[in-house]
Image (cartoon, rainbow, N blue to C red; front, side):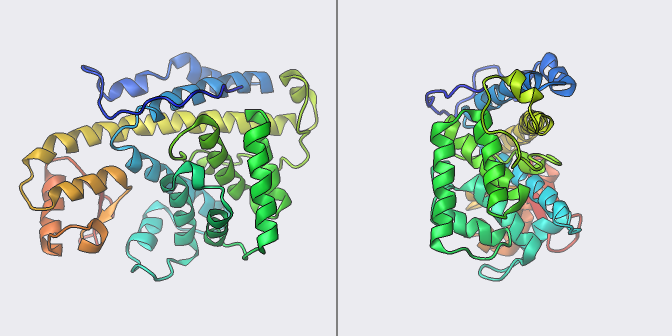
Length: 337
């Protein structure tokens, strides 16, 4: 379904005359129609492959705002995970749980779910499926600690999936493996995103499937291999495989659309940045381009400015249209692209 490309050189420069709005236009209308109209596993596989190829081209641009983009996607995945877990926190409440909690303090069950998805977006993709990182992610997802042998078995399964099967079997296998170990489908989404990033040679994973309702479902009964996509369509569980492929395609298109939106805001911030005279403003701009949101405190921005100076800087950036205030409050305000 998806070829394994050779790693491409990464760059920060944007092609002359190419605005960020071109990214949205790079998704052809036929692809959006194909994703919406997929009726068989074969249709869904073709649409999914095309959508992932478009996303891969975006990831390899290595834009300077890619960190904020991935973390915003992580927030959406966490919000969906919270709903699946039967909790009521929305994206704003999740931001508060993480950003307004002191370092070292417990962010609560919902906040920990967000930290799990932030881990996926921030850690190097090559490190995500190590036993140590899997143990930390499982704890954040709220699962009881497993012994070293069980974690080793899970890590071995994932390594085999990443190295020895096709992309479709790899994605379905991630959900099946999570189910066998009793971790639920939202951990399956996390594992599938990590495996996809490693398969495609991305430096960081992009949170995709976590925000898609019902992605993965129950794939434990799906035959692991058949000779053709047509056979998959006719085999028991074919509808679930089709749903997973469509969810993957929709997630890729959603990520591309978000990149165009954040890219335009990042362009505005980058244009204004040289005019900021406050000492340490460059560090604040860099953090804004690499994270979903910040609070106006030295601890959150690693700058030499006072908290009052930071508030003034953020307020100015809001007035200039470079960032947004995301909380809607007059105190404990939160800012981001």
